Image (cartoon, rainbow, N blue to C red):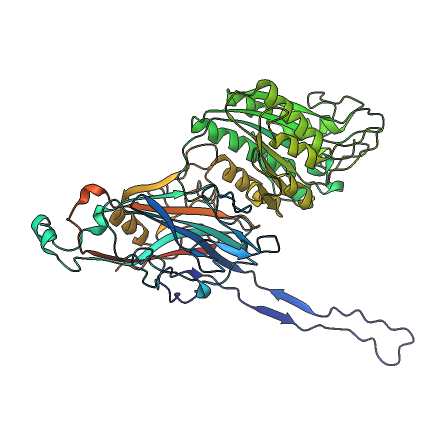
Length: 570
């Protein structure tokens, strides 16, 4: 079932709705009124609930004219000033989007609000489209600018949130109309083409805005540490290490079940391979952390792979993580990933070292950045854990993960480091969120924190992170009429839920194996559209009018292959 088109020009969003709830009557069995002994087992309140697929969209739009950039409209925008914001219980009484430094606003975060999710994004019916910043006229749709001049430019970053089920997403356009409008004498003197010229004169770029900051970011040389949880709960069944009974194949070996560390291995190696394929200017290293055994006098943490520019070496270090984790948690004091004495069978796990020393892992990664990092290069640490930092059974005490992360974000010791944290499953969300934040900034920054309820989404998160260390992927860069034509053709432009895959949105089929669905789990994906009417246009498009609808279409991943609904030829 498809949702009816929205009344706004913003979107004709179509969503496969849930099928509602189906109740099954309970049934009991009686043994007869004359029985000396009787029993009744009742299975009451049986319910089947259809899954949901709901796509929510928020955005921030800018308009640049006369060399000045202004907010146009946003959603949500609780005070109607064109800048994305929501009420909040803090000193400012709100959380606001800012894409530029604002010393008077401690809540500036440089990206569409990362705290937005399926619980707090208002419906589109509550969107406030604001006023045209030039004319002051009320805007009844997303884009309604009435006095565009050569040299003007605009940009919109949409944040996409899939609620509940994973799904494929297309970006669409409809009702594209480009007309002459009012043909003025200066235009008639230079314009010899019939019909409107505005769309073909405007230069447009459609891209994945990985950090959701309304700007197409180029590459930043980076030194990156991956700091991975090697505790027993990442592998062994008795500690919750098995994710599913589905087979998984890694390096040609097929295992009869999928564990968390398997997904981490696949995700981390895809991360490294993507950076390598993009010729990224990076060094990558790997640190790990477990806890301690009863005879240990120091925690079982360390560096699995020092920082290296040869990413094939890093890929090798990330191979066989089942065995390397087992080596760390088994054996006596001083066990390392390279001992070879661990049992990687997920049904094993007895007598292993316990505890989760996240802070020590962060300290080890920071020491590596200090020792082998490059001067003047961005430093980043991606920390993944599925547990709560706690003591093992030995004599050492764990250090505070929050303090370790605070030291890493500061400029001493070592380089000021962006700390990203990934909370998997039952991990301590509050601790990992407090750790997350930018270099030289405070922690508890939602933009740097990823809460992954379902470990299956781990590769998607690594894809989002990888895209922040390379130039943001451009989907299409052309004239606006061609971009709109691509979005209006068939089901629109099929978007890829994981940029680690080498999917070509314009040339590969929508059901290509390299195209992945978008995940739920609170993940935020951003896609952006920018446009500019070059100053060189002169009078050629004077008085022309361009109208169009923008929208997103989604359908659930389960039982669909990504090809989309059949398109009826027009």
